[in-house]
Length: 219
Image 1 (cartoon, rainbow, N blue to C red):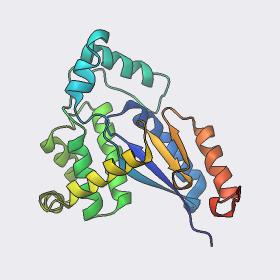
Image 2: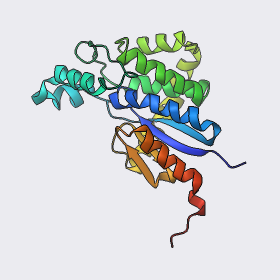
Image 3: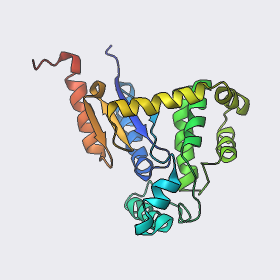
């Protein structure tokens, strides 16, 4: 039996396009079964929202303008609802808090369970308008999802979660990842970035499944 095709998926938990893309990944995994493994990684986009939104959007309405942009971006997608309080009133200072706890969850349980927590945190922010930049809020969400608070804190206090998070951030830089979400295929030879439709994503995966990279010879 052939090994499954690995897709490395880089996102920032506060990114609206990653919230929209979540359903597309679900469809890929549902339709492809064990043929494809989507490996999730954290990407630093909203590490400092005061700078990224407060300053860089200052001539476009600041947080209010960005909130409007987020709602309008998600409006065509029924599977990605956005609470009107998001960014207008609920303004996480950073995505790094959620990312750190996601890596702690991965270390203390499994990548699959951490991925489920990432989905829950995105829903918590975009649907329930929770401030997932707040440590207490993220830990409460994680514990509500069945994670052990002591195990999470142990992974953080030991430094392991920080190291795993930095590894994700550094690998993204090495690969030249431009933004969230990004799908990395074929050992980094193909990178799909942004609002990539399901058909485009599926077509790239289909081609690699039909013609594995190790079988290609162009030189």
